[in-house]
Amino acid sequence: MGKSYSLDLRERVVSFVDAGHSRREAAARYDVSPSFAVKLVSRHEATGSAAPARQGRPPGGGKLSLHMDFLIGRVDERPDITMPELSDILEAERGVRAHPASLSRELCRAGFSYKKNADGLGVRTRGYQAQAADLDLPAPTPDAT
Image (tube, rainbow, N blue to C red; front, side, top):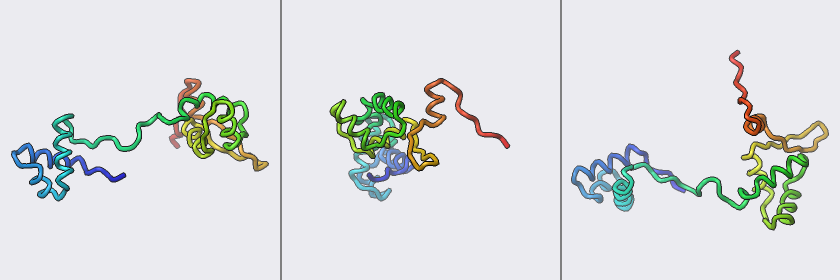
């Protein structure tokens, strides 16, 4: 995805058009495409804001969001479960096929991290921040030393 033009430039283009100039004149003056100027002024007229719209997919979606409680329960039951095993369980019990990397990303977002013990075996654990949120405990404060 491309990067949005700055809010300052957007406001200057809108002000120039509001001062009575055409959208194409504004595009030529500020060295932007005529399409951008036309769409920007239309957006400003519709919303009252020159700020860019949010880019990308809306947060919180995806097929795994419906199954997070199930996944978290499985990891809590067996912290040393591998992501391919968890993927197979999810497909067998819920009929949802997910790549192990996707499962790992979602569990990291849920507050889990992957730790290895002295034996070299990996275990998924929840960080203190996630546990504190579940138990309504205050988050740790950094020492002022």
